Image (cartoon, rainbow, N blue to C red; front, side, top):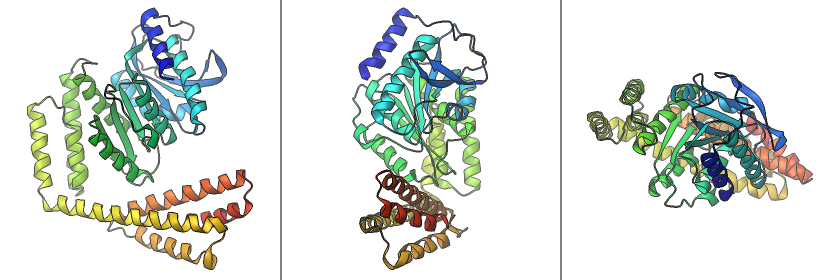
Amino acid sequence: MKNTIYSILFLFVTVFGYTQDKQLLPTGAIIDSVKIATAPTESYAIYFPKKYDAKTPLALVFIFEPDARGKIGIEPFILAAETYHYILVCSNTLRNGSIQDNIAVANRLFEDVLQTYAIDTSQLYIAGFSGGARLASYFGISTGAFQGVIACGASFNNMDKFIPPSNKFSYVGMVGDRDMNYQEMIGNKQWLDNAKMVNTLFISHEEHVWPKQSEMLRAFDWLEIQAYRKNIRPKNDTIIKRIYDTNLRIVDSLKANKEMVPSVNAYEKGITFFNTNEDNFLRAKIAEIKKTREYKEEVNKMEKINILENELLDKFSLRFDQELKSAKSKANFKFWKSEIKDLKMMKSDDKNPLLQNMVIRVLYWFQVSVYETGQESKRNQQNDKFAYCEELYKIITEAD
């Protein structure tokens, strides 16, 4: 697969032979279904920024939506695309499923797009949500063709965690603090830091959903700074000032809400690493906040909740696996009803939003686990296990 995408890029760069039949597509609007020439049953949605002229090569983002909804996948990126002049492409064929099938579909998508439109192949990015994020991360690692990966709501597959030293892509993680994969994304950032990869993590007050356009713009603000540092784009002081001011406004809002850890994270997003006066100011503010009692108390609370969350996940996983073997719950689901009731009580504690978010994450993770196991059992005609999962799923969802 690596050789495939490299050969596509080589063809485009050396021949520049993109066709003209699709160049008259409108700008500033999502075109929902463009067929792939070599595979007419496959298609993609595409978005050209309003200033696209079909002659000047532009940066491009390939997007993977886990339910193959091209239009849905493009929508979160439109504000960033207009701000920084990116073309957006999202497959209507790729969906959660066979990795090998998706690799083949993705290669046909890459080939069609790169040979059809005026693309600056030094500015290719790849993004995805949930299972689409895992696929995007895979291509980011395995090809070396992309300058950046934007992974929303999920990180790498475990088998992907080998990054060649020559692979210098920038990695943006995006996750909600109520997302079932929140802890996974926190751990993923720590792994990337240890691997010396240029990365950041944006955390919003959301569940397992695509980020909003305003959040996605912040991700591309950060990627713009990385592009300046790598000389992919010329440094623009006006844009840097806007990014700096935006992060200061966000910090003011977070501090007013007494969210000290997110305040530090927002300050970090404004650092350009050009050793400017503004960078030094932000570093000083970060050091100042980290010395406060409020910051230390918040970090302590987060650590305790993290321990509790892992304990709950381990306990639920073990019990679920044990009961699934016999396809019945001891004492008529009494254990689960009691546990779900306790979680529901914690979820109602409005004075502890960190705890509330943790409960939402645990409930959603368990709900998805039980549902997917039940569907697998149904496909395998394991009717007892399917019935068990159905009943347990009802108990979990009653907590919503």
